[in-house]
Length: 145
Image (tube, rainbow, N blue to C red; front, top):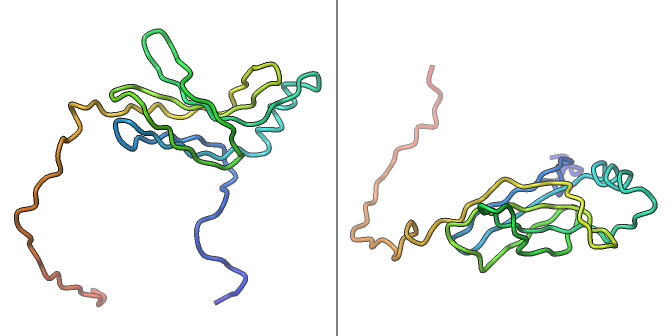
């Protein structure tokens, strides 16, 4: 085996993405990567007259009136975050962007919408296991012609 190759997942993929996943009716998980190319493009758009406060990830609740900002926290170019204490049956989106020195926010990435399940659709108790079935499954590792 070649000693210069490492196994495992890469730290970065060199792609821009922001994914929002439902964990349960009250919790969401987000993960992202933003490339230096996209950040540089945003900085050139802002221009030298506006200084940036850095990257931030925000969670928004979507309703009939639009979006409500629920949380904002500092972020790194590659990261993840949990959002807890959410409403069951609510649709959420996340944004990754640059904060401005005057309180502005330039959206660089937007996640997929994620809807937490309502409490009526979540199981109230774990199913009871009444019997265990054990099977032997033969494995044929030979080649068939």
